[in-house]
Amino acid sequence: MRHLISLAMVLIFFACSASFAVAGDTEQATDLLKKKMDSVLAVLEKDGMSDADKKKQIMEIVAPVIDFELMAKLTLGRANWSRLSDSERDRFINLFVERLKASYLDKTTLYSGQELVFKKARQKGGKIHVPMEIYTSDDTVDVLYKFYTAETDMKVYDVEVNGVSLIKSYRSQFDEILRNGTVQNLFEELEQAGQ
Image (cartoon, rainbow, N blue to C red; front, side, top):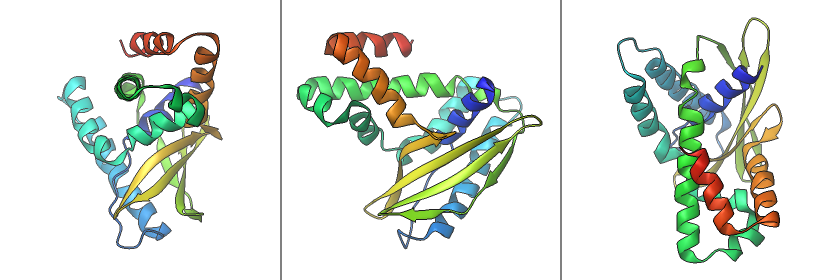
C-alpha cells in the first residue's frame, strides 16, 4: 500500500500541462491530463535511458505547470508566511521545491504498469478538480488533481491522495516545526530531506 501511494504521488507531478481556451472546460482538462500522463509514462517506460535522464525529462514536463511558489506559500499558511523576510521566503521556496523533487522523483522506479482510470472532472468554484484512480491487482489509490487558472494556463496547486491533501500534510509538518522551533530549524529539516 505504501508503495502504491508513493507511486500515486510520483504520478501526481508528472501528469499535468495545460493551456485552455476555456478555463472552465472540465472535459478538456481531463483529456489533456490523459495525454500528458501518457507522455510521462512513456518516459518512465523507456528502456536504455538512465534514471537521471528520465528524471530530467520528467521535470522538463512538470516544472512549467506546477505552481511551486503558491504551493510553498500554502504549505506555510498565511501566519507563518508573514513571519518570513523576503530572503527567507526565497530560501524556503527553493528548499521546498528541492524537497518535492527529491521526494517524488526518487520514487519513479515504483511504476510498473499500474492501470490509471480517470473519473469525471468537476468545477469547484473557480477551480477544476480532476479525479483519477490507480489500480493494481490488490489495491486502489484515489488521486485528485486541483487546478486553478493562471492567465490562459491551468496550474496544479494541490493534490489529494486517498483524501489527504499534499498541502495540508506539509502544513501540519511545518506548523509543528515552527511551533516548537525556529525558521532556521525548518530550513535545516528541508535541507536534510532534500539530500
